[in-house]
Each structure stands twice: as structure tokens, then as C-alpha cells.
Amino acid sequence: MFTDEFPERYVNPYTDFGFKLLFGTPMNKDLLIDFLNSLLHLEHEITDVTYLNAEHLGMAELDRKAVFDVYCENTVGEKFIVEMQKAGQKFF
Image 1 (cartoon, rainbow, N blue to C red):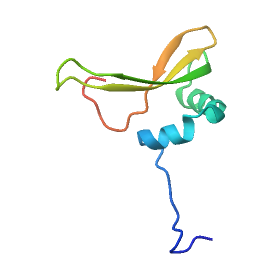
Image 2: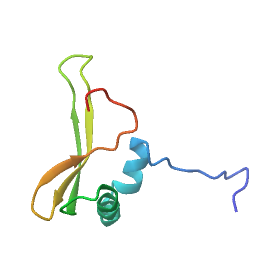
Image 3: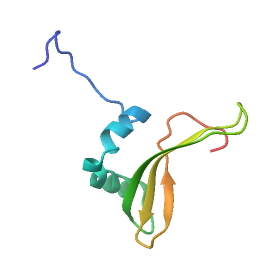
């Protein structure tokens, strides 16, 4: 039971921090693969994911920025990126 001394805490999976906390560890790799396969309904299921910290910044200040959260590979060897994105991006 939680008291005022130890209040309940929740993690928002819609934030970059929350998503990486829940899914961004090798221990939860199978959970992430199952989650992505059930969410995306791809023709070829995801078989592997790699967690990489790769930021791609634009050349100018107004250029968009994309942070790739998860690099995926499917049953036929295709590789693609899945990005957890809450805020709208005009050109993404």
C-alpha cells in the first residue's frame, strides 16, 4: 500500500523516456517484438530489434530532427526503423 511518504508513480509510455524504460532493454526485447508485431500487422513479422542511439539532425536550425528508437529486421531480412513519436512533425 502506498502512503503520502511513498506516493504511486507511473511511467508514460508515450514519452521517449517511458518507451525506452519499458521496451529499451535487452531483457524486454521479446516483449517489444511481440508489441510491434501486434500493433503493425506487417506482412512479414519482426524477428529482431536493435537498440541504437542515432540522431539525425538537419543541416539548418529549422530542419526537422528524427531520433530512431528501434531498428528492426523481419522474417525475410528486410531492415527498417520504428520511431516512437508523440508530437506531430510536419515532414515525417
